[in-house]
Image (tube, rainbow over all chains, first blue to last red; front, side):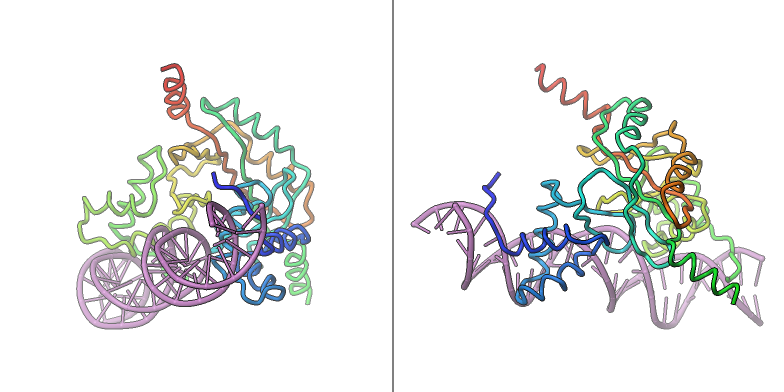
Length: 135
Length: 135
DNA sequence: TTCTTTGCAAAGCGTTTGCACTAGA
DNA sequence: TCTAGTGCAAACGCTTTGCAAAGAA
């Protein structure tokens, strides 16, 4: 494997992701980084997101929406996708290692990890619907 | 919503999926159905797969591979993706409703369900590697 | 200097869609 | 007959890639 060299673009992408609680798409990352490096290209954003994810510095979220999302928090946790507004939120509190262990007990291959996506309705959409009904 | 009419193509797609344990991509479904209906188009396959999935008659698996896969078994269960050969297997035995309930306890919106994808190495790839090492 | 990363633009690939035609009810 | 479904081909949207120039070590 080739030696990794520093790049200010990659650092900016990493910093941007670590500092947020939402889960931006590649395009959202691109827009944000362009405010610091106006010449950055979408290709560079994709290359760095893929690189960072492969190194475990960020997490790639492929939950069946049209585009992937990225998460700067690397602690074991899960995600919930609002079927109404598309927002992706973090969900802590489920024991990820226990889930892997339970699966390993039912499987004759090896299990390295998992991705768990919940689908539902976020608090905001839930309340908006409630206020529509009550008038 | 428009009334649903019977279509022999859709029935063939459904029957094909229900009869298998692997998890074909749209393209694999297309190839298979073309042996019965040589004129079927890829667009029709996609339209019917989307329709069947939206009706809950099949399950769409979006586990981050380049293309989605489809599953004719609709009982609650999970999937495991082999990182080596890309094969997707069913995994039964984990209590899906319990997972939803645990998540609901940590979330202030509503949870309707989830998709849980394990990543690892299937039995076949595991054994192939072992026999390579021992010679 | 040497090798990695970048910007740009084009290509790739899975999926969706518009339209005229076919077929189910 | 009336409307939903089909086949075809073009378009779409996200992502990847080839290449020459720029930048890190």
